[in-house]
Amino acid sequence: MPTTSRRNHRQSKAETPVAAEVRDLLDEDNVKEMAHDATEYLTDYARQKPGTAALICLGIGFVLGWKLKPW
Image 1 (cartoon, helix red, strand yellow):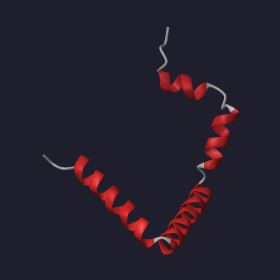
Image 2 (image 1 turned 45 degrees about the vertical axis):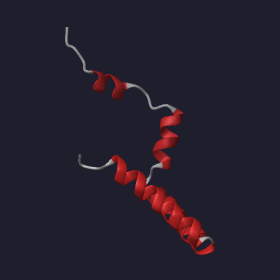
Image 3 (image 1 turned 90 degrees about the vertical axis):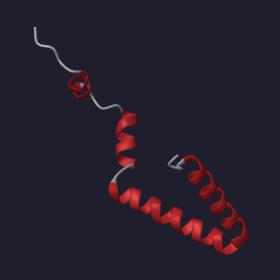
Image 4 (image 1 turned 135 degrees about the horizontal axis):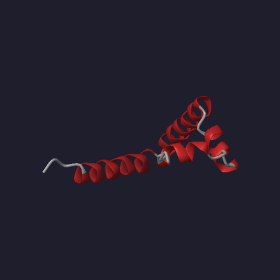
């Protein structure tokens, strides 16, 4: 009796509507558009509120530096 791996078993199942929707959302053109929209929004926000944007960046840098320190 041949054994099948879990990967083969998952691939043999029919694609669910949710999986199809996620695959469509993660289409290359769609991801590029979402990234462009996010960049545009963040740029506009930084122009409107430069002090807040600078403090957010400082906070993110502090947390990343604290968590990713090599020792």
